[in-house]
Length: 613
Image (tube, rainbow, N blue to C red; front, side, top):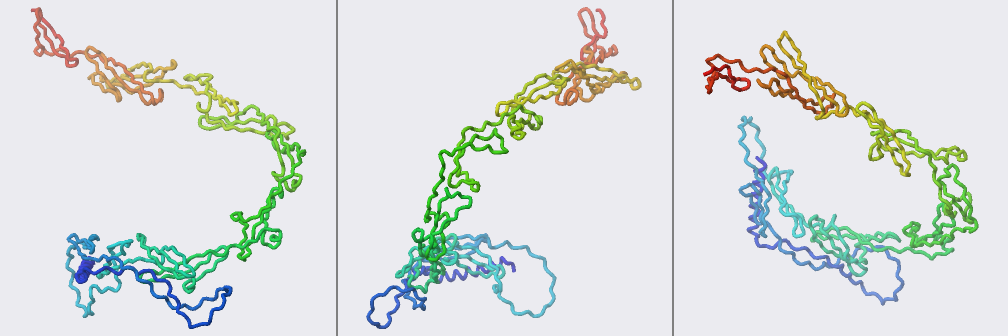
């Protein structure tokens, strides 16, 4: 049977059952409200008569935990909760959607649960007769339910969560309720600490993500030690009292603890005797630390036996410090320090020093053990001229160097102190640029790049400028010469033009041969115009054709240069011959009659003959 049909039957059955219950029970109040907090522990019953009480003696040590006493009387029940909200109706509407209606009027649409009817399948073949089967089971009898869940209400502060479960296999349905959880995962806070006489209070928050519900519970007084598992602390770690609160009516099952400050450290006053007894210890200074400048720092040791020694920086407030005595300098002990060997004299100041008379020795050379004063600053290097080691180019940086003329003296060990400089790539932004010899179309030129260093010195780089090359433009002067090549066998004439273009900067002439402009048959007069030409044809009065050609992409004048050239080719146009007399047109004049015809080439009227009147 289709699973959707099984679901539908199960939901309808459940709707009928719930509807019947609602009809019978409608109007009843909701579930009982939460139970109030547990009352304090009851008072232990009195023992038999005893003799008169003697005087109170000193308090003895705490004895071992005794057996658990009888439970106290139950606390007062809490007030009844507000009426709950039940389900008034569950139905599947005409769209196949599951709709739930609550007793407070709220309506929830859970979407489509009824699928469309499938198409009828083809008839199968007749099966073989089988053995007698066992008794069948009910359609809703399912060993392992596979539930589809529909959330009717989310668990919030106002109400608990409700989920409708429907088995995919058998269609069985059930409700699942998500009540408040005051146990594992719940946060809690002790709002009132217990004492020996009075109980404490704990505020517990529900573990639900969207729930802000809280419940308050009591914890026993500290005298009822059977309710606590005590984890003793020491001078650093607090005492921990672990407790358990279980109340099924309120849904409480919580394990927690409270902390009480432990004993404080026991220190004795600082004295030489306390140091000798080990109650105070000195921080051992670093081996390289000068005794004239090192303080003597002592830290206390707790006498309660906790083992804590306060030698860490965060416990500096409990340290005892004997300040360092400081250095002792002779006011007449100043003398000039020797120059450091192996270092440039140009870079060393003239320094006078005065050593401490107490701590200064060859084995303990501390900077703080010596007073110093500079009588004159280091003079600095005296540099020679720059030498270009690697010349820069437009695409790469170069390198220059210079030598200190003082450091290379013999008394300094013939050492050479070199100053190096990276020269940037040649550009007018980094250098001052000056053309000393201008290049021409065919001859090279010269230019100088001058770089100014930070100290004001300059470095000059001379470069050779390439020839400019011939320059051509769309306005360049030109002359076209057309050569006629005769092919007698074919009665054809080829007109081959050559353009002579003059450079814009000099008198150089560049010759460029153009494609064949025209092929003419001298017998028939037929003409074929060459590719790339624009022709303005002549006529009977204008005896030549005008040819226009665009020169572009030529390496001879530069591929980006375009020049439009124009030239003429003589053709020798003639009027049409006069037709027969009967085809002539008579035009009568005052003194003569004219016989004319129209030329098909130029469109003008031509006089073939005339006669006097």
